[in-house]
Image 1 (cartoon, chains in turn orange, purple):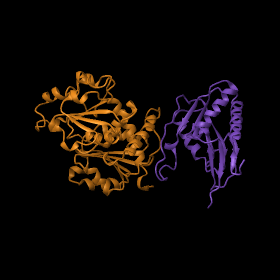
Image 2 (spheres, chains in turn orange, red):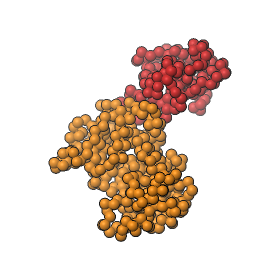
Image 3 (cartoon, chains in turn purple, cyan):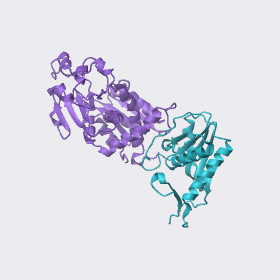
Image 4 (cartoon, helix red, strand yellow):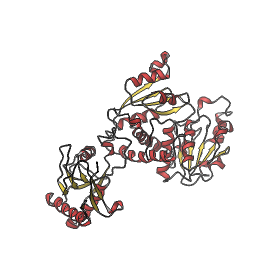
Amino acid sequence: MELNRKDLLEIKELSGEEILSILNTAESFKEVTGRDIKKVPTLRGKTVVNLFFEPSTRTRTSFELAAKRLSADVINFSVATSSVTKGETLLDTARNIEAMRSDYIVIRHPASGAPHILAKNLKSSVINAGDGAHEHPTQALLDMFTIKEKKGRIAGLKIAIIGDIAHSRVARSNIYGLTRLGAEVRLVGPPALIPPEVEGPGISVFYNMEDALMDVDVIMVLRLQLERQGKNYFPSLREYAGLYSLTPERVKSAKEDVMIMHPGPINRGIEIAPDVADGMSSVILEQVTNGIAVRMAVLYLLSGAGERVT
Amino acid sequence: MPDNMLMDEMGIARAISRIAHEIVERNKGTDELVLIGIRTCGVHLANRLAVKIKEIEKTDVPVGILDITLYRDDRLTRKGHPEVRKTEIPFELSEKIVVLVDDVLYTGRTIRAAMDELMDFGRPAMIKVAVLIDRGHRELPIKADYVGKNVPTTKTAKVKVMLTEEGFDDKVILKEEQQ
């Protein structure tokens, strides 16, 4: 199965076969990342530009390593040091970058849809590394990869996603991907943080942790975006932690072999107890490792799109 | 044997047997010897060689699997993306005598890619090439050390190696493309 696309903008537009094709390819790239010489010549001569309008350590570093392990050249633009602070528009910035002969632009932007604008206007492959509260497709792909690697499948699994669903691009991308692959997704969090439009086939909403976690195979904890505190989504951090923090007690409702995930960065003691984050069931650091293989697969599979032979 | 059949089941079996004997003879045994099959048919042939060598020498020769997709020189000019599969070499290559095994030797570009990839795994003492069919038309200075059968071909012809491991009866077929 081919991924016949120039860009990776959202999980919503991918078919189940396309998602599985990325995950299978990532498996082969994971073998490369385990070698002594973790580098293959596949994208030699190609240029990847990381264009980040929001802070990020994990995602940017992960894309950078993925590109370097494929022998591409990488340039990092972060907004604080770029001409954007002089008033340049997004598209002008991107066009200038492309004029330097970039082949891929990896963009993170606070506005939903920003990557789509670039994709429409540029010849480079555009990869969405998080746009506003919309989507974060490579995070969802690495989450699905980690689940499939550990559980052997995704179809039929019960997966709980806990926290601020409304503002989470990670949740949104995962909901699209996991339901497309046949998982049963349970959303749990304060009512104000669960958007009404998420309901659909394969998705159920809970407001109580014990009910939501009953017999689940996977628990995905979202980062509580502390910057939104005080905007009346929930009364206080303490109350939030009391009701929705993933504690060792609450994990007991889930299946014995439950796996616990978090996209990072973690607020220890708020959305997840330290004992759970560091416990045997946690795969949080494996998610980070797998992120590189998944991003290598995405770069590889987009590389020939549109017959851009140069 | 039909005209277009280059080798039948017996022919393939005899070629494997002879190559196994030649490998053992030239290396004076199996010390430091490893076989690396190039996906897909090369892997099956490498496994068959290992079985044969065990019959002769009573020793197990390690067999690795090489997927050269990421090292191809045409990967960005071809349409679409060849599927990437895993390379599996769970043993040390440094100071080993590596026999690369493939089904057909043609332009030599696959062997070039395979050698580049092997070098990223270690520094073998020696790399040799074993193929079932050598059909000529080399584009790089590469030659086979062990050959099942030399077959003169036109550049438009296709050589198909079919093996039981892939669900066929063992045979090698030459197909002339009608231009």
